[in-house]
Image (cartoon, rainbow, N blue to C red; front, top):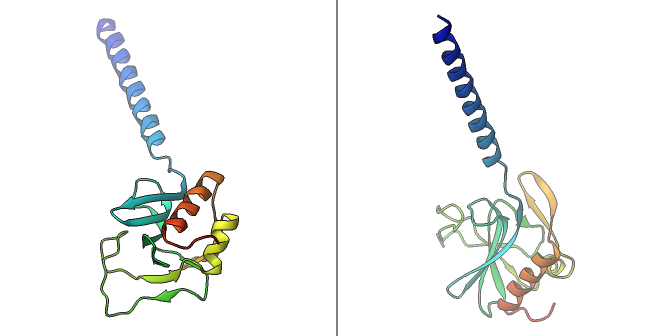
Length: 156
């Protein structure tokens, strides 16, 4: 009986250890990536987004074509400014974040809220959760400046 008990206990111990290792690895993989400002280009369109890099987890995205003085705004949050203009209900654009119909707005790249983002690295936004501020790190501020220079805003 002892011949069978020792290998069985050893096998159960190895199974328990393996299960614990897999649970630890699963926990490590579910750590959320940090949110931040990211710039990308798709053809002649520049995209400035606040969210998790290389994912669909975006809180705010602004797009513009080279030299365009207005940016299209998408996402859960919008710049907290009176200069934000909701797009016409007759244009049924596709939202690049969700793939569904866009709840799109437009804003001048010279809007004071966006100038604050360029100058101070801070943008006040509003959404269902209320009004709060999105901040940019020094490297992110360079990307933000590149976006507005591309959009044709000139110096702000």
